[in-house]
Amino acid sequence: MEEKNHLIHLLNTKSLLKQEIYASTKILFSQFKAIIQKEVIELSQSISDARIRMKFEDKAEFEAMMFVGSDVLVFHMHTNIFCLPPDHAFWKSAYLKKDESLGFFGVFHVYNFLAQSYLMNRSEDVGFLLSRIFINKKGHFFIEGVDPLAKKYAKLGKNTISDAIFKEIIYDLSISATEFDLFVPPYNSVGQINISQLEQLSANLGIQTVKQLGFKPDQTNYHTDL
Image (cartoon, rainbow, N blue to C red):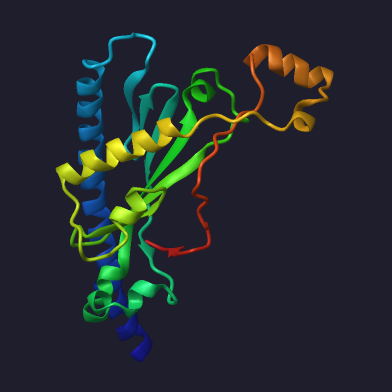
């Protein structure tokens, strides 16, 4: 049957490709976490005031946290493999025209929250996606998100992931998170409060907080299957 042969071909090519990218992405994320932990230890030795947070937490196989001063960076590896949408500009590049399989990626997400949001369990507080790191089967990558990372690594096929690159990413993300400050919510948004909210306020010692950042991801920008 033609359909059977086509399915067998897809399983032996596309499905195998995704499994291989997934396996390599897991290894890279493990390396990434180890480098984060090492850099946190080194940074801690240069911080003179114990009130300044520098802490690493390995939350799970696909998640880690880096506390940096008043912020926490949450590093998350998505467990699916993503393909660029058909209208993405990279498909017009010679790099992908030569080999379309290079348009499939493992993805790391890096989120920024206030450290107090986690430490005080303020579940209503809002964080932001700082960046998405896309890595293909050759270890070539590009980054979407806040500058300077988005400008440094906007081209696919030019950069290969490495320990040195991971370190640079860690520091650029930490600087971006630290430089963006908590802003005061509009007065009218907090001008009224009911008894339930007051009780919650007493329990959490705060109101919903959010950081002002410049990157808002388009969640419909690509599709996934593994």
